[in-house]
Image 1 (tube, one colour):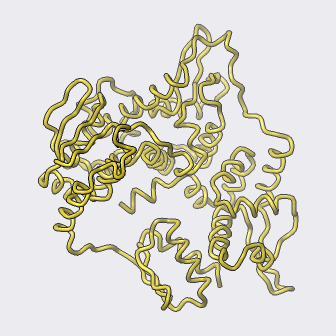
Image 2 (cartoon, helix red, strand yellow):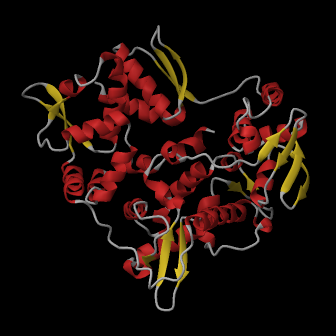
Image 3 (cartoon, helix red, strand yellow):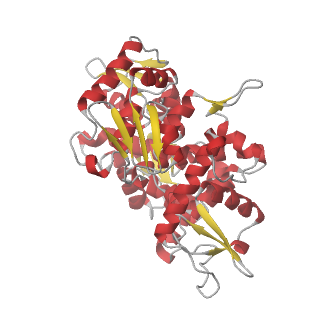
Length: 452
């Protein structure tokens, strides 16, 4: 699912695509600068911290000498990422005939002030004598997951929702745009991306929805830069602490209401004051998906006879299992089904792959079987892939072919760039030939242009 996977990456991809003027405005906030620093690859973080207090430009050759020869490809990926985010400003010294890099002055000053003097959020948490009894961290996590499941159910299957969220129809259309398709007088149906979306873990789903929310912000008359700034700022609030709604601008209050529907914050009302409480989903916004992903307790047991037992009370879990299995009956805390050839063919027709199904079953394996190796019986996973191979004798993928690289270092850097965006299809290291997915062609092309 190349489209969904790339869209769900994280905020920093959106930040990198912003105009230079908007980026410099964004970097006036020290917390934004820290969020950018958190998202960088380890080597890129090292470069930023080493050059943070150097005011002048640094020759590119000098930076390259900081790494060993076998780390040169990682060095180029790190530099490329810093230039994309405009953390490093690239220039050329005509007098010395060499390329140079310098830390963006706005980013540099903001991060220096944050590290030296510390940062304070625009709002402080409310004292306990004003707020009513706040939910525990466990209650807050349960609320966030329930709210998120309710939102997803309303998104894909409104008839199965117990409580209706007050999401505006225009906003719901933004989320449904890529996930649902609808013909005249017909009920909405999941698209190929929609089926794939449901099998993603919660963090990946969150990134997808937030990405759509920001990408389409201009249609709602909202500046994307202000929206990103507020969301990243929100990620630095403390989970479980109450923050006064009155400290927010009118624009931010509207955003908070939408985020409450998604489970990122919980709204509470007192006698005189009202406040919002950030959940774990909100604090994950300033880190990458790999850093924010955590092992959650699974609920699925798959047996060698292809029977599936899901120990769950969630209607969403039941709808997800229907995507690739035949649900036979549902008890109050148990869903029983079977993986059949017909149910899998139906899943494959809807754009779901065997790897996605196997990955979902492994990631959501019940604790009793999660420790086994393998958690899902091999005869089941092998058969799922065999049934898929019967349908996919030939697979067509739009791609770009690269050859005639000027050096092996440039070739390896291009491969690393494609891998970073999950778009490397094939490489021949001996002849220095490369094939990448069409979705990542622009990133590889920009990387190669910077090497000239």
